[in-house]
Image (cartoon, rainbow, N blue to C red; front, side, top):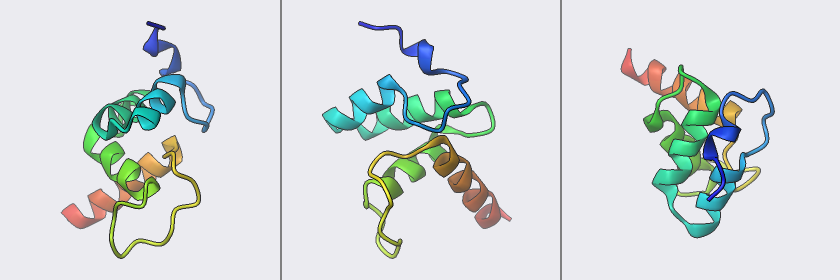
Length: 87
């Protein structure tokens, strides 16, 4: 299997290979972990799970997603939303 760590810490907002693989197989938890690993230390797996759910349209009351793969920017937005709710 390819080295999934190759996707970690890039500045590119496109999905990494590991995230695409997990999205294609439907493993949302692994997709979120790959996204969290790629996004950086400020984004938790829970933040990434929220971003993945939003991207796949799994959240009721949310606008239609622009794409079905969450980006690091989506994960950061989810982190900000979660931190506002925690206040």
